[in-house]
Length: 171
Image 1 (cartoon, rainbow, N blue to C red):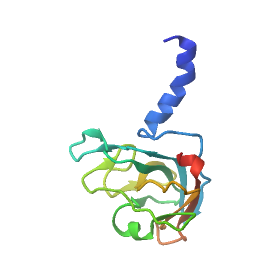
Image 2: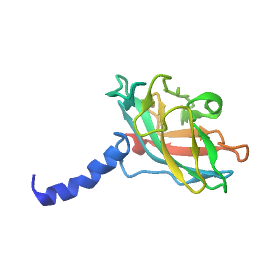
Image 3: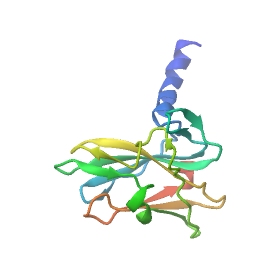
C-alpha cells in the first residue's frame, strides 16, 4: 500500500478501532449536564457489535443492534460510582423512543459486555476524569427519523440526560 493512501485511511481505521468497532460518521451530540455528571453521545450505528464473553474472548454478536458510544465526565470534587445505564437501578430511568412513539428495548446480556464499554455493572470515576461506555438497543424501525434517548441521573442530583439522535447518525 502506498504511503499517501495509508495516511488518508489510517485515521479512520484508528477511530473505528477506538470505538470498539462502532463506525464514526462524524456525528456526536452536545454535552448534557445533570448534577456533577456530563454525558455526550460520541457515535451511533446499527451493526453487529463486538462483545466479550466472561472468559474475555472477543466475538461478533449474531444480531444487529443500535450501538451507542458515550463519554461520561465527572465534574464533582470527589470520585463517583459510575453505574451502567443498562444494569440494575438505572435501567428503569433509561429509555429510547423514536419520533413515531415506538419504544426500543435495551440489549445487555449478563454474561457479556460490549467491546469499548465499562466491564461489569459499575466502576469508580475519579474527579475530573472521563470514561467511555457502550449502550445497546434493538435497531430502529425503518421509518424512524429521530430517536430520543433518556438516561437517569448518575447521582442524587440532576434530572438526568436527554438526547435527540438524527437518523443520519445511525444510517
